[in-house]
Image 1 (cartoon, rainbow, N blue to C red):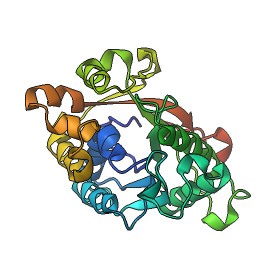
Image 2 (cartoon, rainbow, N blue to C red; image 1 turned 90 degrees about the vertical axis):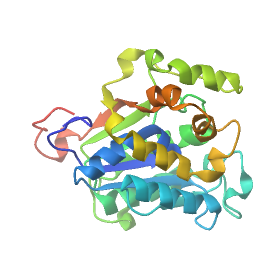
Image 3 (cartoon, rainbow, N blue to C red; image 1 turned 180 degrees about the vertical axis):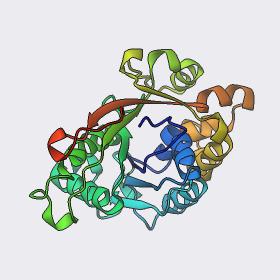
Image 4 (cartoon, helix red, strand yellow; image 1 turned 60 degrees about the horizontal axis):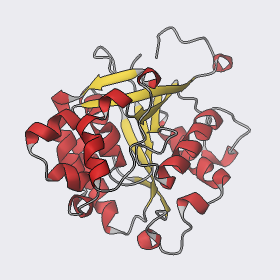
Length: 261
């Protein structure tokens, strides 16, 4: 069952590095799935629940229909005071991060997990890379009862996708990122297995992006860049979302899937 299926949408858990990643990378898909009645949720790896960005995240998730924030509370690699007293995500033991994500997978019991790609999401942010690494491991570990036994009953999602950007789909976004001194790490077009038109949910996606008010106020952040663009330039950037299939439910967990993901 593809992410873009209009007949039936699977339950969906996003696992992302920062507040705002969920809206920028998969806000349209989250909104579409929620509107179709599918259960959706988001795990955010960084920032403390008592910081201002947690409130902004709560507002964005409410707009997208993705429930309450599920924050792991590690510090942003570039902003130590984002989680006082906690290690940076990129410094935290990998096993600890994986275990926390496993706990959320088992609690939510999604059919599909979506996370960052292995390039660090265009800009190569270390938190994106660490979240990708931990989410891939958690996807496989969540279904194994002998791993993380205190994290809840085993649950194996059917598919793991990475939100990504193909070379041909970067367009004006790449120009804007280069203009503010950021990297553009897109992937070959053939790496993309799902191209999802989210134009029907663009209003909610944009509202969720702008709900991250502290980021929208910054010059170099993507929410800030998008907030200052005229609609005619912004809409092509946010109207399509791209995903790469990273993994499927192993056949050993049950019957082979009858539908193609």
